[in-house]
Amino acid sequence: MSEEPKTVVTEQLELESMEDSVGLFGVFDENVPIFEEETGAKLKIRSDGIAIEGEPEAVALCRSVLDKLLEMQRRGDPINRTRIRYAIDLAKEGNADLISSIMGDVIALTHRGKQVKCKTLGQKRYVQALKNHDLVFGVGPAGTGKTYLAVAMAVLAFKNKEVERIILTRPAVEAGEKLGFLPGDLQNKVDPYLRPLYDALQEFFGMETFKQLMERGAIEVAPLAYMRGRTLNNAYIILDEAQNCSIEQMKMFLTRFGEGSRIIVTGDMTQIDLPRERVSGLVHAIRILDGVEGISIVRLTHKDVVRHELVQRIIQAYERAEKQREEKHDRAGE
Image 1 (spheres, rainbow, N blue to C red):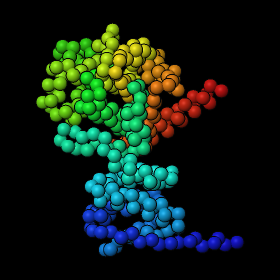
Image 2 (image 1 turned 30 degrees about the vertical axis):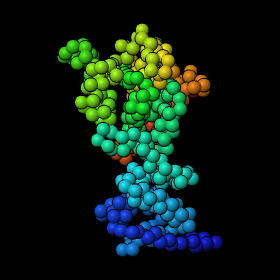
Image 3 (image 1 turned 90 degrees about the vertical axis):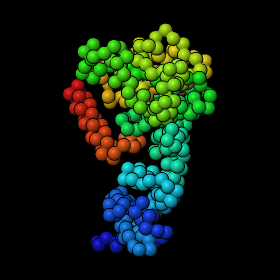
Image 4 (image 1 turned 135 degrees about the vertical axis):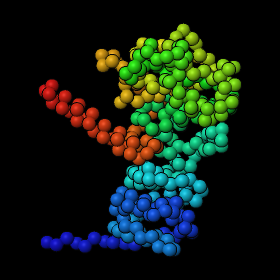
């Protein structure tokens, strides 16, 4: 019995200018294959607009994404390949209405006036958690904006006088080298570990203001060991790279909580540099604190990566390899 012919429909999407077309599809229409591969519809770029052709569901999906991205494009938000793929993923999940709102909310401004916005649903949830909870764990792979967004929210709280100072810290765990072999005094030795935090703060405050705030103690960037024995009041405290904390260090840090303070803990479970026999304090803390009232744990994934789209594929490849390794290990143990 022969198959029934598939229904094919065509929809027209009008464009107001050449800028609309270039913004969506690129100078040489290099983004067209992404829309076609991800939605199943075919696109024909014409002088007066776009013809979307294919099965009804594919056309409806493609049209909804194009409408939302065009709305973003016309208000000045740049469209790139990563945003296109993410927008299509949202639409496939039934969240097409969230596309423009997620990518449109301005949460902070850098000292040069650049707008900082959430770019994924995971980032939006993370920022909401930062607004509504005093202790937040932000866990996910590199490139998901864990640290950058935490710093942005810390700067916002400081400027709004919700806190009196910002404290950023990291465990000084070496991936291959020992601190003792590095030249210079202790500050010089720990600075490389703290450089990403310096960079983020300087982007929001500017170099001069950042230096002034550091000098008067309103901003402190220090190794985690410096936190021992202190009670931190009226501060926005960010522990970065927390996957490299021991259980004892994590407990010590979380009990520094003082009146009027907020604590943000960020980390990537796939980049633990501790010796194999030592359990990560981040892994342990999330296991025992999950579900505790007042604590929010936000898990970001490869879908929330906002760097080059190749980073997403690299992360997925490593996740697949790790899953296969675990399955092989489980079978060997049977």
